Amino acid sequence: MRRIIYNIISVTFSLVKFSLIKIFHWNTFKFHFIERFSPNTQVYFMGNGKICLARYVTAHTNTKLIVGNNAQLIIDENARFNYGCIITAKNYIYIGKGVGFGPNVLIYDHDHDFRAPGGKRKNFKKGTVTIGENSWIGANTVILRNTNIGANCVVGAGSVIKGTFPDNTLIVQKRETITQEIILRQDN
Image (cartoon, rainbow, N blue to C red; front, side):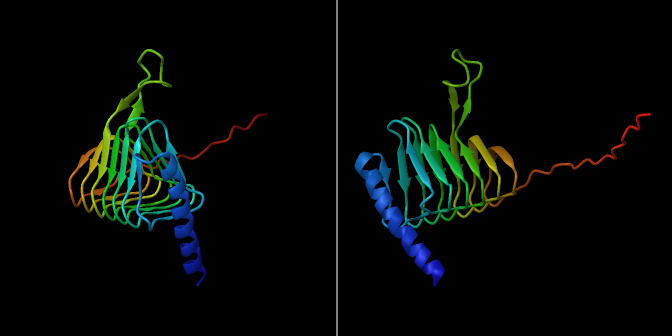
């Protein structure tokens, strides 16, 4: 019963919050009436970027959606963001139907261009990110610019990925754990 009440509060809060955002970003923000966003989620517009949310998108506490000037962030039906996810679009990010995210997933469609005049603070290399429908992105994954993940993929927790991955692919980054005995010095 408690969960049902919380869901009703979240849907109502999201409707009110998104309606207020719509007033200020009439042409650049689209949402469906039934979205379940935690009250602690944040939506940022930097310039005239566009955010489109399809039906039944869910986001838990501390999720942030950030869109830059002239950028697009499109999230399709039934996408589910766990705690602490951050999606930052400076060009184009598309998230397909039914995509699920573990906690603390980061998605960036850009990199800092530290070699450009003015340094890393003002210059970015922009690309795109697309994630196909029904994919699962594991906890603490970082998805970088120019990444295309096909449909029905699974990305293992803690991965840092960039590139193109076909449909129905398991993406896991193995790391080697090295252990070594610590020998303490004996000072005389």
